[in-house]
Image 1 (spheres, rainbow, N blue to C red):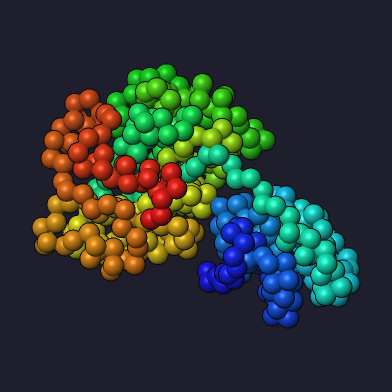
Image 2: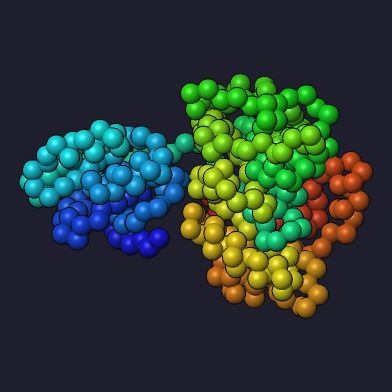
Length: 364
């Protein structure tokens, strides 16, 4: 997706414009300039996070069908625009997408100026980070667990949710050594009406430490892995955001609707790659997949580097901001086998701290 962002000195978040007609876009730019409002001009698909977080969304009839097909939820601050006087097709489209108003331009330019002048909706207090791996054994699950454990230990949020997005990964509860703890796993979780409260979710899930709950995949050998529904993912992430929690999603090498949901909803998508040639080749493809769903992507590079590849070189080759390049941690494998992952130290803690620093307001 290509985007054009206008600039001004207001400091307000830009309004999102999804309009296909050239003349209509030019009119919207003129009105935005009069209102001293920045714009982000995008093209579908844009991802659920961009749709949900924009303070105002301006779209035309042609885009409504794409929004409906993508399953974007209704949201406040949606305006449908058209050239000339609105007719039945525009009003029908407005009902379909849940637009608050239908404005025919240029006659309704004053009303669009008023919409641009409205203060931004307050952002929800929670945050979502999704971690993917470049090839097998990259360490996405271990990094996800380390970020969650570190966040819980430092109390960066009221609660921490660690979400397993890899049905073939063996279960994050096993990684953390809490596989015997009572609580629901993905196959047991039933969400009605697409909604769940954070309190109910916390009480239902296994605890992996103070303030940390884990939603893991099952390990039933007698049946194929149960699919994770994207609607259930949306409900779980929305509950965590509403409660002000940090939600850490591990998708490892998983691809599919539920993993895409975790990517699109993320405030930060982290790609972890080992400093080996084959891993970097895999990272190119994975990074491209992530970028098509979330532009806010960053890199962690994990040693060893048999060929002497440096983290900065790898980041430059992938055109990604580098959060951290960490050395190998040989004792970690034995710890995982004996007791499961604990609050990390050493290089793994460095990587976890780098991720949390971005989520606390830093820039990747």
